[in-house]
Image (cartoon, rainbow, N blue to C red; front, top):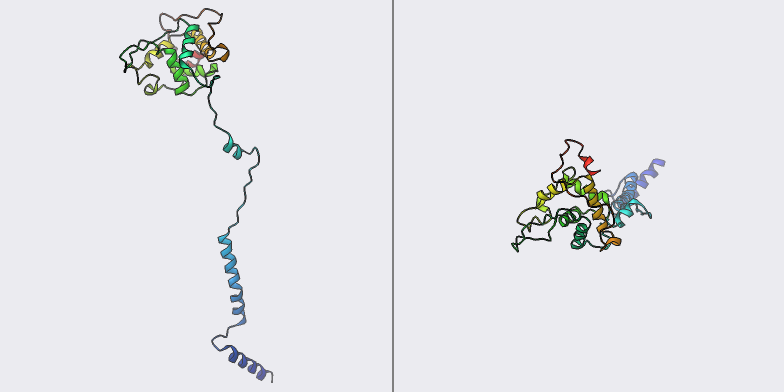
Length: 228
């Protein structure tokens, strides 16, 4: 009796849905769930989750983006080469001029192209070093003495507008200075760039050291002692 009822129910289902549309309930259930899974997966790829990065005030990343690059500025806001190198010679009358070079354009000796002016231009324009500190000038003199960074002859000041590159003679002139003379030169350079000393006369101090008639012997080692 039960089997006949079951067979009758099965026959009604076949007539209602058709033989081709008959599928197990497990298959129907999986197909009903599958579109939801595919849609969910598609949405996950289309809209991936992202973590929002919040910059805190004072964080290294924020400081790196906002801090301006440091600049080397003079007290007056600009370097007045013509004024400064003249003041150096006022303070050190015996400092070598080395202004015997001929200008390529005028074919005349450029008396204003001095060792002091080229030293300042190399220090500030070529190397970009501050002009108000003794240590930076010592580093520049170390370049000339050959115990720090090498000087590129092609970029040396006035190398392109004088008939002869003045680098070698400038190097020789600065090498002849002893320790006291170098210290006096450095102090004169710093004072000449000081706002309180602009236009001032030579300060009352010990007489400016004179150049040696012959260059001192160069030490074989310990070149850093030259800058003490």
